[in-house]
Picture: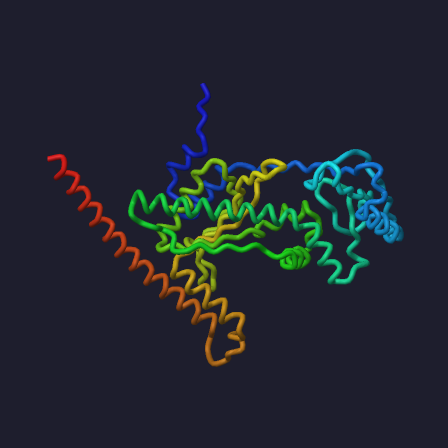
Length: 336
């Protein structure tokens, strides 16, 4: 007889205070589902449309790159209404031709013949719809985190989250990262390799709060955990401490459900204090200071901050224990 254990059942038994438990959490998450891309079509008898005229002109200018333009017949509905459908040119190319391919179609724009400004403009135009999707995922996760914080305050009179920050990578930053790492400038490559387009930083009060929040998030069975890096249990050599989680959150748009990746950095107030100042020093010429071993001093500061943080955590646990004992005594008196 087979017994099925759900992810949420397994998550309830997890103590995420340590890297091994976090790795177990990652393994329980399962493989992310691949999104289905719809093939672009062109509405016939639209030769007078300005978009199609521009596309044909582009195809003619790219003739030297051995591209063969092919109009796919069919119909498509745009958000402007039945009469406002915008045709898309689908260009077939040889497998070795460089360029930028669009999700779900063979549409192609050559990057070699463009200036840097034109290249960035083309990239921005093509990734804009995808970035809006990532932005929706970011807001979804931000709402979930605030909901958890409010629920914990109501139930336990404690807010684990001090504050939350969020940001979306700009098209320029995304393109530069892909070029720097040698990734093809395609939508598929972007979706596979750039998982930090939507980013959230959760600044908690104590280390215990960080692990509690991660455990609660993992118990939500509609999230897909992709990566976990625990730099709290295993700090970087320079003293950096934080817990990074990359997950996929469901986003429901007019064209259906999309699982969107969001990177979340969890850190305490003390960790955020050190990381913010370390970043400022590192990018403001601190490396040129010869009288001080800057790397060693920053590491020493990180160690001292960690020690203070541990002492504060002990004090907080003592306060909570006292509060729990007092509440237990009050309940006993009421029963009597």
